[in-house]
Each structure stands twice: as C-alpha cells, then as structure tokens.
Image (spheres, rainbow, N blue to C red):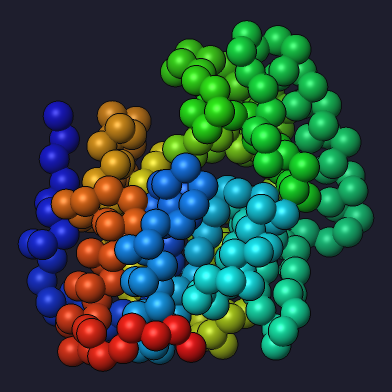
Length: 272
Ligand SMILES: [Mg+2]
C-alpha cells in the first residue's frame, strides 16, 4: 500500500513562495454537495489574508453559479476547465474556453454519447446535475447510485470511443470534447482573475480524487485530503502530502499551514 507523507511534515519554507490556493470542490471543500463549515471558515480566513482561492471542479456551470457568488473565492472553473464563473461587481460573469460555434457542434456529439452509455452500460444514469451542464456530460457513479469499477471503466471506454476526454471524480464520470482540463483551467483562471501569469510554483493544489491527478502530477506542491485514500490504488501520480482529516477539515489544515507560514493565522475571521 502506497503511503503519502503527512501534511504536518511539509516544511514551512515550502509555503512561503505561494501566492494562492487552487482547489477541487466535491469531497475536498464539500460533503454530499454542501460546503463543510471548516472549509468555509478557511476560505474566509484566506480571503481576509488576501490569499486568492480559485476552485476548479467537474461540476456544471449551473450548479457552480450560486457558489461563485456566495463563497469567498476569486472564481470557480466549472466543467473541468470549460466554463469560468466569477463575480463582476454584483453580477456573475460567465466565460467559456470554447467559442459558441464549437460548443454548438460538440453538443450533438455529447448528447449522442450520453444516450449510448445509458442504453448500453447496465446501471448507468446521467448525473442529476446534468441540466446545468453547458459543455460536458456526466454519469453518476457514487452520488445517488453505485457503479462498480467495471461499469465505471465501461463508461470511460464509451466516452473515449466517441472522442471525448473522460475523467472520474469522487462522484461522477465526466466527458467532454476539447483539450481543456483542470490544468488549462488553472492557467486561464489565474491570469484572468489575478492578472498574474500562472506559475505552478506559486500555488498549492488541493484535491481528493482521480480527476485531480493531472494537478498532482504537475504542481510542485499538492495536497490530498484524507479521503483520497479510496482512490490511491488508481492514482499513478499521488499528491505530495495528505492531510490528517477528511474533506473540509482537511482543506482547513492546508489553509492553516499556509497562513501560519505567512504569520497571518488567526489575524481575521471575517470575510471581505
Ligand atoms: Mg473531488
């Protein structure tokens, strides 16, 4: 069994070059779709310390809109890099990785693939949040149903046969057309929301699942929350460190370590 060093062993010096935090949402900030109180408090403390947080998720744009407005984050990239949502004054700004014509062309292919999966993979149903999806499709495997590994693999195979990129989050199998990813999302959102070119050495990434693997592979400093244990056998590239606690409590561990290294821990508990 692979072991990952505990976050408590991460040297203080590792946090000092950091400008901000990139994070997954499901089962990293949330539990059963609701943000954990510890995670929300950690987001407030990071915002109060002027540490930008950008969330990158496989969830749909429609699901993410309210949180992009309500949570103390700079923005949310939804649909694995397809859609960027952020506050612009009092309104929500929605931007796309692909232009209107390309999205329209892809939609028919995505829908055909979804129909085939539901018809041919026993037990496969589309995710209940599918109505809010603008650039991808998602099949539920653990949110409201339970698909075994073979069925999840079959869904991935069907998506790839249709020319889709397929990834597995903690709850869904997501499929989309295009070269966007959580990595391109980071490059796009950091530039768009902070004005800075994305330097991976200046950000920590926090996640919990196989769809975070590209970030674990490419980010010099990455952290898995403790519930990542379920997915470790499937990861070729595990995170650098793992937290002692799960989900939002684990994210709060990351925030505390970063703020302690900056000497700003506990300076404020109010959002801005
Ligand atoms: Mg997740």
